[in-house]
Length: 552
Image 1 (cartoon, rainbow, N blue to C red):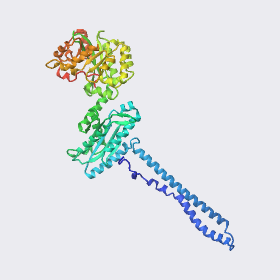
Image 2: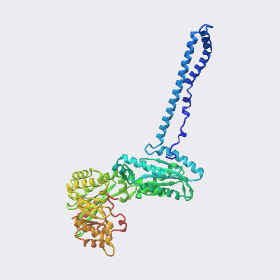
Image 3: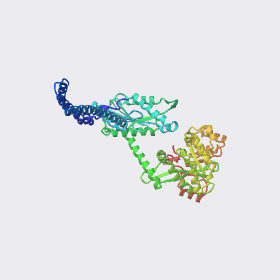
Image 4: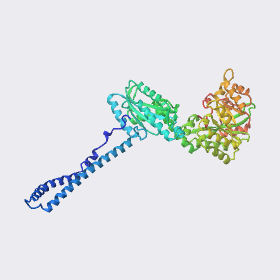
């Protein structure tokens, strides 16, 4: 891995005193001096005594000489032991520092060391009059890889991904693993040649598009990238001169790439920051709204197209925020799913809807939309049935609508949940049919009670020929499988007339009126019973067609 660790930065001054252990060295040197002085007296006398020329040396001097020898050996040995201990300690601390600055899995820099490396690159870019680019990379759907194949293979994918990215980076670039599946790299480039960064990212996508292989298992993965630069079309941008700001901007651009569908990259633009701030406000507002009861159910009429009789209502989510105003469900529902509160939100709305629907005539049904996130909960059916028991609401009057996307995440669990609900009398329909990837085999084997035709197909009936082959095909399919049909998005008489020719259907749309509050529904039922009541939809209403709990 290039430029990830520089041991020359390691501070060795702290070992200076230890390297020169003056105590052990002083003992050895003193012993040597004493040995020379004592030996100069003892050895001549000892030699003379051996030759019979004088008396033997004094015993005290001989003992002193031997003691000096012992001290020399001890001091030298101790000095060498200390040198070995210091060298081992240095190696251990260098390794500890390396582990503190290097990601142990991929060998990349970690977030802490990346900050220092980025500052060095920034200083180099300033001296060389070059631009600085910071790129954030996130592995899409990494949780699914771990869930399906295990964490060992997930780790192998991260290691391989780091290697592929590093292989495409130019000399001097720094790569870091900043989080679980998040990487970042920084590099300099000619501010007049911004296309160099685009070319580099294209090459990265070419590398990542190849399947990851490990022990015979093939994994396809994609990445989302955000890029930020300290130069714009006017030259150096002082607002992006700080590394922390540059990193934050790259992160915002990466999040924007994921929001736009993943497997793509974007350069940071100031408008993205405004979008992120708004999203954060929405997140905070949703959490506060759940505690202050700001979410309320609205009800859209469902009518027997042949007779015009009211047969039920579909519950739609509405949020009237004191701070943000009226927020479209197309905005807050996906965010509620992402932050993990859609289950709480749906339950809060359903409790209110069950209370409202309990006041309606017994023949009117209540339809609710179920988020794919809720269908991942193995206890979803039990929770729903418990609510029905608490509110003493007949299961036969409840219809849940699930989208086709639910069928591709865990078909076994979905089949089990549908069976549990139908066994208790709850009706189950497949919503927005034709917009996903449902197979005929799934329709045949899964115990659905109804098919709902997506409004986009129904709107085709408003063309000059009043003909939609897709709608005809879905109606024929429903008849073949003995499944009743609901058409949503009926907005004018031309569409209604075309649907009547197709046989007995249930329909809903703004031709029959706008979604209404519980109080408005109560007034409708009290004054007009179950009779059909049409209202002309205003153009502004069409922009918020069918916002619902399971909006995708």
